[in-house]
Length: 370
Ligand SMILES: [Zn+2]
Image 1: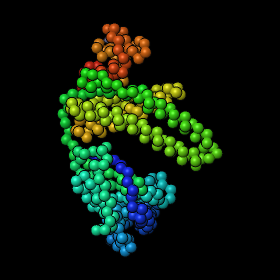
Image 2 (image 1 turned 180 degrees about the vertical axis):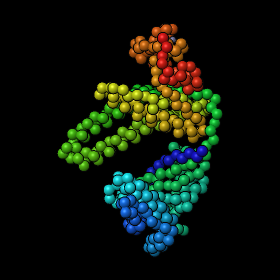
Image 3 (image 1 turned 90 degrees about the vertical axis):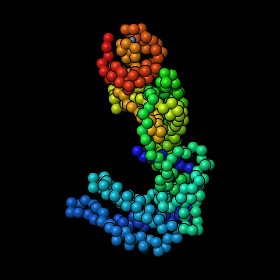
């Protein structure tokens, strides 16, 4: 299977190209939109054949000093945009014409070369190039097969790295449990923990900010909307940074010992009836969990290591030794009514998840005994 990873690096994009490409796409949109026909029932469809395309291309190239491929790229991206719009329109979900709002340039693989870890993008053929030395950015992957298309924005370049991956048979599996305040893992019979309290704190801080902005929404709705987007983005980025660090650490260890991972299948978590603050905590906990899982899964897959999902129902209420029912003891500890085992609830959860993931009894979600 082929995997793709996208990374962005800071860069100063050529202003003239950015502006001209933006205008070009607007022109293409106007032209392509003329080729939309409407049937009697009011359904839209695009009639834009090879000839139409050639005509448009030739016309646009007359006063285009940058590489020709940018024109093709603009036509392709706009056709994609229009097709997406038609689908929405025919389902009654699109109002007016689609719009081009972002100043981004799609750099096709024909517009750049990669040599010795350096990307060389043609701006004007045989005259002007934009060169990027990937070695300057140590967070970029080094074990890729090829680089796919690039996206150029005002101050950054988004690069997609491609790698063909063969699935590896793991030597064993580690298991992980994620909740509001920590990630607990069982790796090679060793318990590891990562504190998520900072994450929880960030969520609370931004929750307060959002509440304040909501009050502002009555008098200044536009400012409020902008602020809300800004803060949401910041919150997401801070949370992502923390989670990236944790999952990278874990993935490195698992790759070094060739272990796969067993994770909780979130589809099986029922929200139930919860009150206000508990509900928010549940939501945050799920958010953390989802982010953790998708990041870890991707980082393991990059090395061909598999991930298994297990129904986590009762995973912290079932005794991993005798399958008896556990009840809350004190703090985060649980006690088995049957065999007397006392253990931390997160440790119990990862022990059970691993056992269930490997097919051991009892299976996840099964009724408790005793
Ligand atoms: Zn027991």
